[in-house]
Length: 494
Image (cartoon, rainbow, N blue to C red; front, top):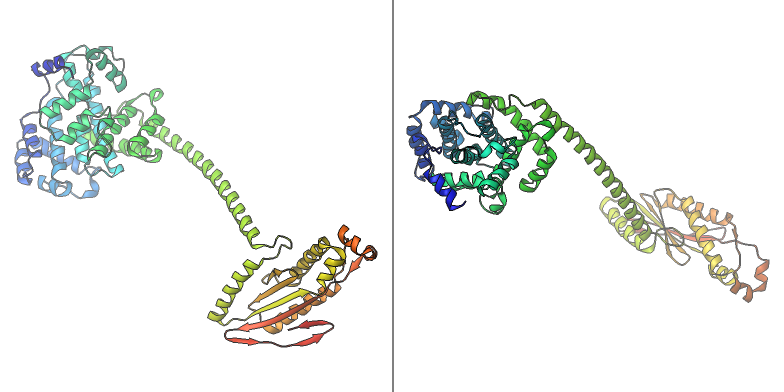
């Protein structure tokens, strides 16, 4: 603020100033030793203020806190600072609200904005969990008090502002003509009246909250006052000029408030306004189509929900794709590349877990070991490609011959292991016999590779070879190991 402007303000005898009661209340607010009796004594000087404080304390904004019947109750239920803030709010309003001057300021609109701003501040404090809701109420009420002072010393200051509801236009005119805006002037006034620092900062930084760092003790308080002013301005704006999306972005940056919470605040403010109008005996949103405001909020909510659903759908598709890919990788890491059976690493892990289960529960577990007879002869006579064919075909045969609950793994080379959970030796032996019979019936059409043809010309004349398996079965129970042996048609079961 320039020295010239400050000199004009100091010399002006018509500036708004706190009345006697308000001055005493401010003194109590700055006195750390003040108590309930001090507040009650001052407020007794103006019973009308006491009545308004009690009426507001019992309004829907505070209904959850219990019945307030006296200033003592107000202090007990609301707290000393909250009661002082409400009393000061009413005292200042009573003194200034009817002081309409013949200048360019739209006084009815000014007080409507002030009361709406205060209402928003109170609701916003609850929404963000700010415990100084009544102090924010007073701060928001006085946020534009500098306009009253500037209108006194420059009567035609606001004559060039087409719509005084738009603060950007008001501030631009103030800075163009005076080099300062009303927030700075308001802060200077409150400081000269010995208002608490947080209220002075909330007013002076209301248009530029970055002046108070977020980590400052009053950082959140200042940003709440800033956002409250923007919400009040948008509620009073004409429908075509309402910019809720821009407001939502500001609320997100300043208070980490998403659009859903902002819409909740707007609805709560619209619901609280009728009671505030009754308490202050004035009109706040009488000419505003509040249904349209709420409809805009609902439409924005619907659009946001649709966008969220679309985003969630995309994320789910991506997550499903990643999950499928992860399962595919996990499955491939457990499988033998040639045969598609479980590999040795998975088998070892499975058997370790299976034997622990056997030890804990006593349930049966059977394991069979199988290898292919004369497999080296197949490789030597027909080549390794033919051997791979036999291994793959045998793997498919094993899988088809056992149950879905059984485990078939390639142990190494032409050796396989079959595990039968919850299966006794007799049942496992019957399954192994089924495997042996299937191997006997199997026929493999083999094509010799170039190397084997050069080593064994007679191999060209061989079109089929028969591969048999020799399975071995064992049955295991906790601390018990049994084995039996019998011979059957060239296949050995152990």
